[in-house]
Image (cartoon, rainbow, N blue to C red):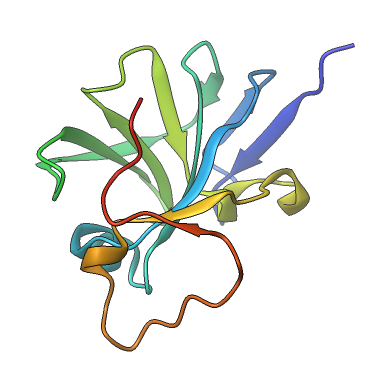
Length: 136
């Protein structure tokens, strides 16, 4: 039986459901993630786009630090940052792990864009640290 992973925004107006494996569960420390998520960086999990999505979504488009064109997804009601679609990775959608209903589904593997982390950020959790974005 496939494991179903669900999540959503703070107010419950935006929901998602997937049976896709969580691909590349990582933390990003680029300046864009610090600004967009108001934090030291952002955690991400990539899933296949056949994920079921319901609710209002607001979209903000930008070109990220990495040069990738992105659509940042936010709940259209409460503003929760949901994740993004990245042009360089067609057929996938990226979710922030804080939106997962079951937080233990997020098991991070690495920190990336460590070369761009804020100087006050300490990374001493034993995860792999990549200077730039992972390949693939």
